[in-house]
Amino acid sequence: MTTHGDPATHSGAPAVAARTGPPDAGEDLPATAAEGLPAALAGLRAAIGAARFPLTLPSAEPARRTAAGLTDQLDDYLLPRLARLDAPLLVVVGGSTGAGKSTLVNSLVQARVSAAGVLRPTTRSPVLVCNPADAAWFRQGDLLPGLTRTNEPSEHPGTLHLVTAPALPAGLAFLDAPDIDSVVDANRALAGQLLAAADLWLFVTTAARYADAVPWELLRSARARGAVIAMVLDRVPPEAADEIAAHLSEMLAAQDLGAAPLFVLPETWVDGQGLLPDKVTAPLSAWFARLAADADARAAVVRQTLDGALAALQPTVEGLADAADEEVAAADALDERVRAAYRGAQRTVDQGLKDGRLLRGEVLARWQEFVGTGELFRTLEARIGRLRDRLIAAVTGRTAPAAELRDAIESQLVTLLRGVAAEAAENAYTGWKAHPAGAALLDPALAHSSDDLPERAERLVRDWQRGVLELVRVEGGDRRFVARTAAYAVNATGLAVMIAVFASTAFIPTGLEVATGAGTTVAAQAVLQAIFGDQAVRNLANTARADLLDRVGALLDQEAARYLARTAEARPAAETGAVLRRAAGQVEAARHRSGLSRPDGPVLPDPGNRGGRR
Image 1 (cartoon, rainbow, N blue to C red):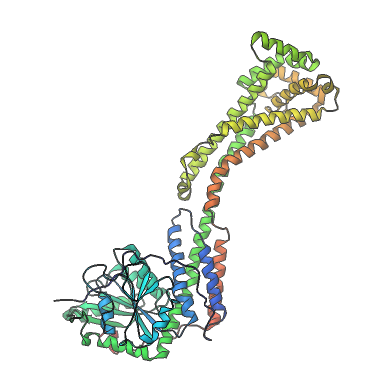
Image 2: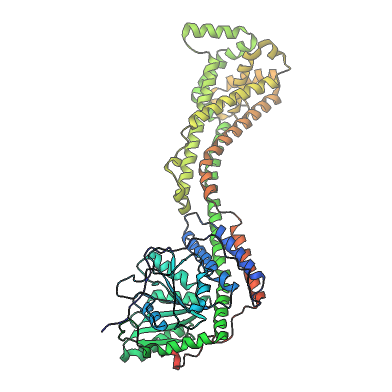
């Protein structure tokens, strides 16, 4: 026995059609729609189009799909339909693979307009069939503007094959959609897009597949947004028709779809043209004929589906707004993990300047040599120090103690900066790696400090040392010692101030300093106090310490910027969620003002059989 077949679409059909912007919904608007509704929808369209969900969060991909679906529905259906409530009623025929949608469409319009067969997919592009009198409305492309109209079947993705059928009454059109469970991802996506553009869903299922999960998921979605639905139970063994129809009716009632008319088509032969016998399709054909002849019924269908789709926008957009807020919160969290890591590095440097750890090792040895040998005091007493240092260096090959101390200070600080920068980079990397959005933004190079950090750290310390010398020069500008000893005395004094920066008490010895050389420290303090005064010494040390910390902060900020630049590039606008909610609220307010409310009671003609079954 030969049974009728099933359509599908070309495997290359796009999941989301390209958009150039929403159509102008402000023209030819009937009095039944408020003037503010098209503008509110256009505003929502713009807000959704501007929303971005770039971070790798569990909510991001669903949000992107939802945004694409809403954009499609606004462009494909809501805006053009609102502009022309009196346009022909579009019946989208959807269902599962093998349900026989194409054969049913061909039989209803009494012409072979859509390919049918056993191979999947069979239909190379969606097929829209209408009466010749209605062709202009569908050809001009207001409805489903992203699909290119063709007069012949096409294998090019994104096309809509337009066919006219005189046997189909004016005011009614059928769109044969792809399989909702197609093996081709693009076909499934296009099927959902087309169903969202329907005034009426004609859902086709079979005796073998009516309980499948995918159709019921779509039916629940349609019910949630108030779409008008009619059901066809196809290819039913005659002996089981009553039992299967009763079960399907119970399932429909359980999903609050009991008002949907249900037509049962028995498994049967097709004729030489691949059409079902007239007696099989007669009840459904007659039902559609009554719908086409009743302008009030068609208008009620349009109003219910349109109002239901509009009412569903606000909760759907609220979900998008929540996802946008989550993106902003995730970007903030990633930034905070980076800032916390580099704040920790800054605290480590600050603590290192306070706890005396920088007075250990080479710095302490060079300082003790510089002070303990009398070098500091001799260089402050006479210019002869410079000549002596040159002679010593020439004879022994050893640099002057002052230069050795300056180099030791630089080396100690650079080592500290390299260590804290490396630790901060590792901490920030670990923090991001533990976050799904952060892990996706990471680059292995971020796990370490910048390649040029050592050079920048050395330059920072040298610039700071020059700043300390300038500070000493300015502070002692009117003091006689500067005039007597000139730059050499400034250098020696500046080194003493640098050492003062390494002790939080500005030369009042701590426990560490007492244990490691407080005598020379106090001796140097006495000299500086004699030159500058006790409070001035503290001020010099505090100013130099603050300058160093500022420079270190800038260096660490540059290191943190490697991370922050990535979140800045991916971060959505902070107000995205608020903009979406405001736009959805404006649509909802305009919907209530429009008077475009759903009709009370059933909007479809009586199917003329008990329980809606043929």
